[in-house]
Image (tube, rainbow, N blue to C red; front, side):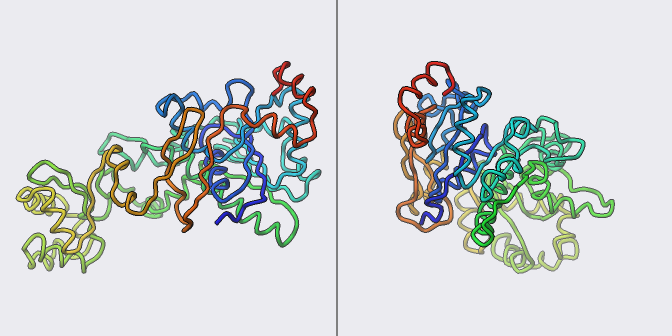
Amino acid sequence: MQPLRGVTVVALEQAIAAPYATRQLADLGARVIKVERPGAGDFARQYDSRVNGLSSHFVWVNRSKESLTLDIKDPRGMAVLRQLLGTADVFIQNLAPGAAARMGLGAEELQADNPGLVVCDISGYGRGGPYESMKAYDLMVQSEAGLLSVTGSGDDMAKVGISVSDIAAGMYAYSSILAALLERANTGKGTHIDVSMLESTVEWMGFPLYYTYDGAEQPPRAGAAHATIYPYGPFIAGDGKVIMMSIQNEREWRAFCDRFLGQPELAEHPDYAGNANRNANREELGQIIAARFAALTGDEATALLTSVPVACARVNTLADVWEHPQLAARGRWHEVQTPRGPVPALAPPGPVNPEPRMDPIPDVGEHTRKILAELGRRESDVDDLIRDGVV
């Protein structure tokens, strides 16, 4: 199931947001040509060396791509890029704010030469407005979007443990590009897409934003618990194991009181009737629930919650996730090649396909000669470009 076979994406990308978007396109069969700096390549290659000497970030978001090194500040390098873009279907970039436009790589200029080109710009704050030129890394955007105001515990804020603003922007870029390709199939014309990390993250903040509608008090930081639904969060069993559980409605609440707590009358207690009351009285109710968990081992509590049934979960380490029985049972782990040997990789979520596209992670400039040959460059000309550090 590779519906994007035949689609060529040229990516002037770095870090996470744009590479994550293009990896999704590559998963669906698109040819993604990743343009990198000669020598070092995408700076995310140097973030760490945890995967057989390769960066964990880079391995995650760059499989199934081709690497072309170009110095686009050199006119010869820019000429190669413009030649590529002349026949490409999609151009995506997440350089510093305004950098692509200053180099003549804005949507209007590119689409004048290639009217069907879909152009996607990813930036921290989007085009226009007082923040347009501000640098924006993931933590900065999490802060601006209000995410840190609801994440953490008490007065202690905490960033989300993954690059959530980068991922949000990457996913909106990915879905917007798919929509633009569908539109182009009808109109023949490309689209300009302007994805902002701030807007992508604020969209994901919809619940707490509406919770504070019209000047209402915002939800408190609640650590691993839910800020406004109760009981919903961690409880400690008698053997010290932490069990996550969640009550989402009154049917579950009544069953939980009867079959887990052994106190069916509690379901009708006026202090705990309805989520708003349970949330307002979570300290007192929490003591009742905690006492029941303390009388059980973690395995006993999990088994009993499952039989109620109430949603529950283990608090896994990352080592546990590598060995997760559900991922193993569904055959989700596959293998991809890297410049340092094969590594496991999770199959793309969604498509039911026994042979998902899981092509290698490229070395810096691995496909430069091949791509330049496709563009009609003579081998001697390529040698000159390599000698001069242009590619």
